[in-house]
Amino acid sequence: MPSLEELRERLVGRFQQMCHRTGMYVPDARAAEVFCYEHFEVLSYIDDCEQAYEQEMTRRRRDDFGPMGAESMLRWFAPGEVRVDGHDRTVRSTGNAEVAAWYAELAALFGWLDVPRLSADDLAAVVSALSDPDGIDTWTRGRLVTELPAASIVVNRRVHCYAPPQPDARWVFVDVLSEWGPPWDRPEAPVRSYRTAGPRGARAAMVVSTLGRQTLASPD
Image (cartoon, rainbow, N blue to C red; front, side):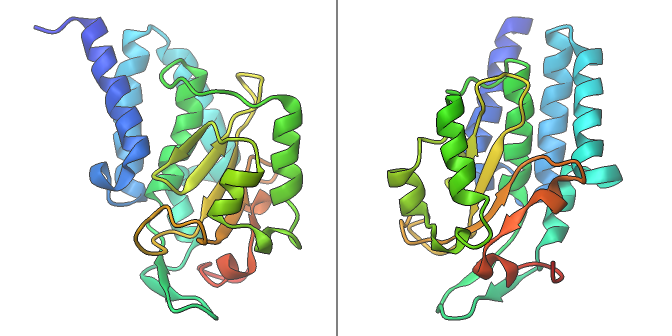
């Protein structure tokens, strides 16, 4: 029978694998939330931090999403295939990578995910570049990789996550338009949105590109 430490290593490893190949593990936002919730529930038990984890997770879910939880990010964007003006490609939002990235931030806080953290100056460069509603349209996956500090982790090869130097500070997420077509890491794929926590919730704090606004479920 495996020991608790071996079980912990297996769960941590599975979560890390899910972050890198999200679609192989969870098809949509709901499945991603269930996957993360179940894994973290067991990990918090093993690490004897159930109360601290539950309090922090509940607070962040409430502050970021209200009563619906992280899976509500799926409803921010239009269901099904969406064709964007000026391009011959369609995009489809499933929300799985967005949910996985949100839980990755929580996992790093509790020691279930080890990621490099940006310096204060590097994080400020990312925020300055991507939080500008007038400038976000110029950014692509290729520019994120070549012109900005390296992301702490890239979830499912399209949600670029930037972790601040302080362990409990909130992350910055930059989303590349999903399913822009194989190869999934094509450098010309446009940035869809910049996300972080905000006093009125994560949806209100999100900055969306012109192409990204075409994928919203309703006008912002």
